[in-house]
Image (cartoon, rainbow, N blue to C red; front, top):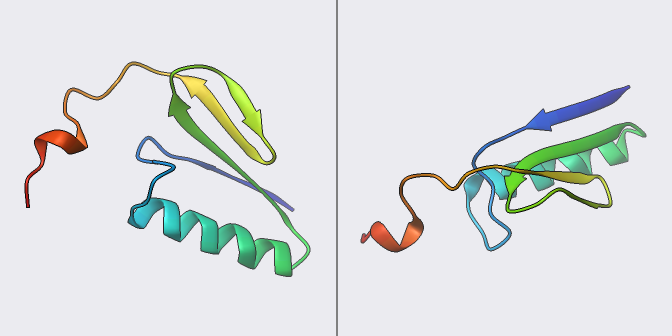
Length: 67
């Protein structure tokens, strides 16, 4: 089986979505299955089993969120 997750909320620097998807990828790998992640970025590129596609930035950013 080949599972493909498509997400618009992914950052290489941390966050719950990234943590969840990495754990899911590890679990599928332990089961002998393939997992591919598709997420937005500034340009199209492949990083192993992670495909990034060009997308406009969201209208808000982490720098605007003060907790």
